Image (cartoon, rainbow, N blue to C red; front, top):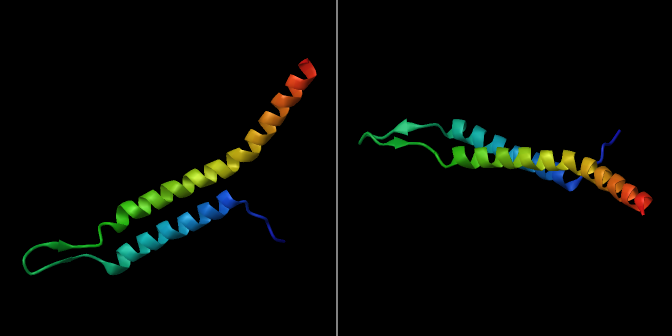
Length: 84
């Protein structure tokens, strides 16, 4: 059985995949200390991964809230029409 996904859910999956890729890449590349005592690590992958994960949660929240909002405003408009 195929479950249709709306665009926000696709975006959430894509962003989550990017966050996981950043995390796996950070651990796969690893960190090292150079001969001069300087730490070499792909630090930029950490905040990028966190930003992608936060975007994924936001897109998922939006996709779950959208049907509720549509139903809410449909009921509000029906109540407004009934009142007039």
